[in-house]
Length: 419
Image (tube, rainbow, N blue to C red; front, side):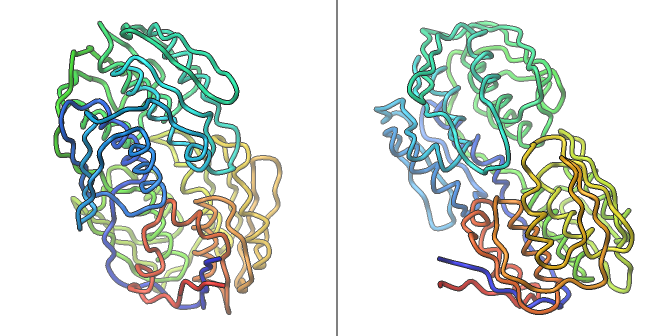
C-alpha cells in the first residue's frame, strides 16, 4: 500500500501552478452527456475521481478520448446504457451527477445510491424531490434510483438546504426541460457558476448562477464545445496553508483570488502577509508568528468546509487558542485524533474543536480518513519535528494531483513509498 513519508521542518518556498478544480470538472464531465456532438474539457486535473468518471462514462457507452495534455473529449452519441453501477458510484459520490443530464436528455436514468468520503450523511432526497417537481417518476429500489420522464417540465423548486451537487444535478436537468425552472436556495459556489457558464456556452439559457436564485429557460438541444475548468480554490488554499504552517513563502499561479475571499482573510488574521493579482496569490510567512484563528464553516461565500482540516492543522502549530466549528458535515472531525497522535492539543466537543497551539509537534504514523483530512496530516507532517508517515493516501489522490512532486518542488522532504 502506498504511503507518504515526510521529514518535517523545511519551510516551503517557490511557485506552484494550480490545476483545474476537482469539484468543477466532475459536473462538467457529467454535462457532456447533454451535448449533441463532441465535447472537449480542458485544464483537467489527473485525479482518481476523474479516472473514475471516465470509467463511468465509458461504461454507459460514451466514447471518451484523452490526449497527451489530459484534455478529455467525449461523444455521447454512442451511449447505450443509462445505468451508473454500484461498483463505481460507491467509490465516488459525484457519480450521482449523471442522474440529471441522463434523465433530461434520454428520458431515463438508473443510478446506485452514492458513496464517497465517510464525512457524514449527504442524502440525495433534494436531488430526487427536485426532479419529481419537474415531472420525473422516481423510485428507489434495491439500492438504485430509477428515474423516468418523457420530457421534464419547468418548475419552481425551493431546496430545503443548500447543496452543491443537488444544485448542479437540477441545473443540468432543467436546461432541457420544457419551460422555465426557478431553483431557490441554490448553492453559490464558484464550481456551480463554472458549470452554468459551460452550459450557457453550449446554448443553455441560465441566469442567476452565483446567487441563491437560478433561473433556467429550457432549450431543445445543446451543442458540443471546448471548455476549460476553473482553478481549484481548495488546492490553492492547501498550498498557501503549507507556506503558513512551515513559515515559508509560496506563490500560487493560475489561481482565482476572488473565489477565496473568506480563506485569504483568515490567512491574514493568522499573521500571514498575503498579496493577490489577477491570477496569482502570494503568501509570505517568513519571520512572522502564526496566530490561532476561529473558523466556522458555511456554504459559499462563507468559509469552506473543504479548508477546515487544513486550518485545524495550522491552529495546532499556532500561538493562542482557535475554535473550529463544522456546520456542513457532522462527521468531519476524524483528523482530530490523528493530529493528536502528533502531539496536537485539541478538545473535541461535538462539531466544535478547541485547539490550543503548541510550540512543537512530532512526526508519527497517521492515517488519512478522507480527502481533506489527508491534506491536514500532510501539512502537519511538513511542520512537525521528525518523520511522519501518512497511510491510506488514496484519499489524497482523489483531490490532489501528484502532491508529493509539487511539494518537493517547493523544497519539502516528502516521498511516496510502497510498503
